Length: 344
Image (cartoon, rainbow, N blue to C red; front, side, top):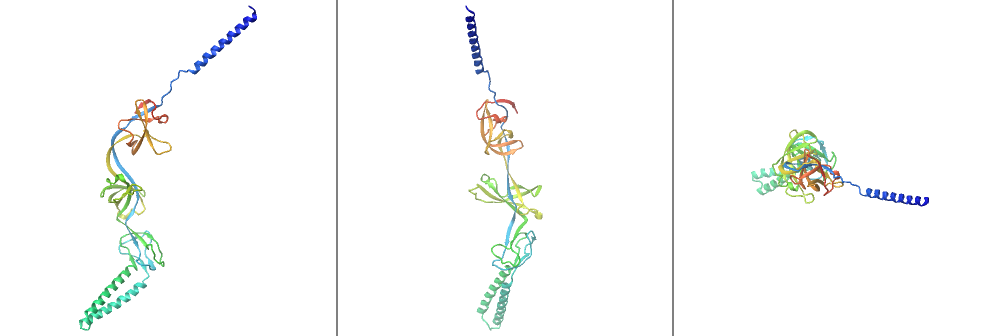
């Protein structure tokens, strides 16, 4: 065999061997021996317990009674004796109006009174008639009533003891549709009106005791009593109104103060879960809890109640004894298997 033929045969065998080696390496790369890693989670349990059913409502303080001080007919204001914020007592003169009309009525009243007295004397000596006396008596009574009404609308007094909360005119102005002054009665009680949810209609009853706090008076809790429950429910908001009265010695509580009303509805047995188990869905207000079934999880939408320390009251979506995920939720999806790291 020639040297050239031997060299050719060696080269061909080398190329074939390299090709086989290349094919073997390619197959090994395509079939690696790998195992998918499961999400690792921590678990805890849903438990049932008695949960206090306390609800908080917000409202503004209102005067127990609000009186608008104004005359029955337009008139010019002569004097205003008080300013906004001034305390007033019942019967105190607040506003004096132009007395011109009252003065004329007084002149007329005095004239009728003289005629009536003259008719009485004539009747006594037999120089008059009972009919004349009766007619003048009716005129006198009508004029006296008219004058009394005019006086009430010339000198305006406060019907209650309270505080001036509004003033709409100055001396010299002519009264119109708005009251001259507004007086709020602040003792012995003030009130707040809350809007409660329809589901509490049978729970909030007249006479029920409540607790109230005020931002303006921190670290102090006031007692209140439900004085009135309005019987109708607003169909737009599904709420109803309840009036709560609060004793106000020293008139420390003033109209407009912000109040927080807490009403205790007792306790009810509810399911609770650790707060770490509750997950908020991105882009919505929905809350979820991952529940473990065997080695897989389900994504349960829940309705939350009150937060109690480091737990949440669950109104729906999780049952007593369910195993819930409290850590590792970021890698989870509905129905996937998981590996349990620890059990709290």
